[in-house]
Image (cartoon, rainbow, N blue to C red; front, top):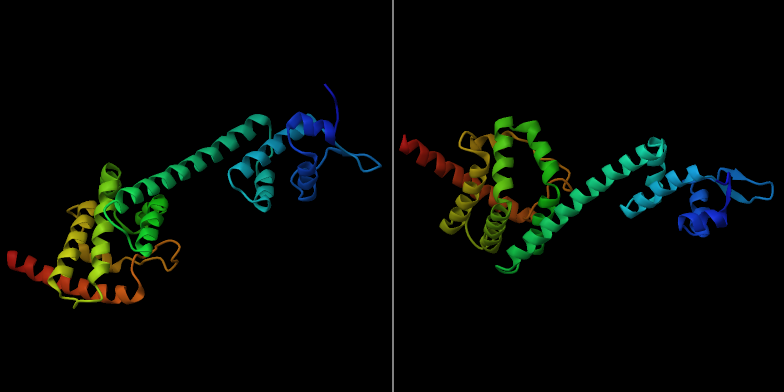
Length: 252
């Protein structure tokens, strides 16, 4: 076993070009174990561990400037390095699965007709951020409610996404051309509310939603509606809740 490998030998051993090795050196990602008085770079077999990490992290889509702190955080032996890479691979796999799910749902739903681009973005964004949205719910909703939503959504996510997306498209098609109390608009709102209540469960009071703050960060909660559409929808929703209260009161 050689103690040191020249940059050329190390390049052949690892399959990484000399140019890349020099670049990793310049970026402080992988320093040679030894530099001769004439400036020649030499590497040891232990240098393969961080090199493998660099290659894996690049494959996972990490920028080089983001790789250095990860390397410093995860210094260790080969087994620790492999476990760390496996963890990152699983995270990447989960993300890719969500991307595939979002595309599959979009394909299924657009087969019913064209979607407003803003609504299509909302659909894909919502699916990609499902986990973060459920984590947010745990801060504001009872645990029983969150569990019910997750259980119902897991069982029929495509059906829920398809129904809600198509109803929202119908709302967008008419919302600026009718009054907030228009019967068709009120029917669409009722369909949407019914889906939401089915997810939240019978024990949840719809009026409690008014006290739950929404994140100001639009990257967290995308909206399928323009500001003008949202203003109209708020008026229509207020009418719906009033009418619902009257109906519930008359039923008692």
